[in-house]
Length: 130
Image (cartoon, helix red, strand yellow):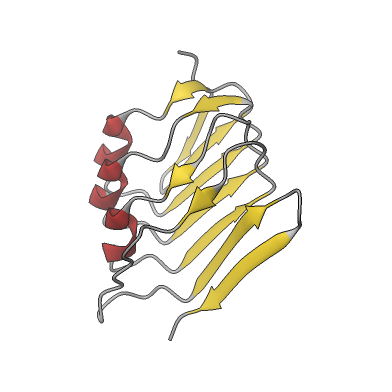
C-alpha cells in the first residue's frame, strides 16, 4: 500500500497515491478535525467503522475517488458529536449510501450532508440538519 499523506495539525488529507482500503487505524486519529480524500483512483472498499472513534472530526470530504471505493457509510459516522459536514461527490463507480437506519444523536452538530447518489443521472441527496 502506498500512502501520500499531508498531515496538518488537525487535517488528514490523502491525495492521488493511496491504493487499497483505508486501514481501520484511521480511526486512531482522534484529534483530527477534517478528513479529505480526493483523487485516489486506486482506493478500494468502504470507510472503516472505526471512523466513529475520530471524536474531533468536524468535516469529511470525499471527491473524485476511483471506481472501487464506495458503499454504505458507517453508522458510527453519524454519532460523532462534532461532525458538521459530510460532502461526497464526483466519485466514480460504486455508489455511497446511508445506513439502513440512520440515527443522528440529539447532541450532534451535523448540519450539512451532500451525497451524490449517481453520477450517471446527476442526482443528489442534500440535507440540512437542524
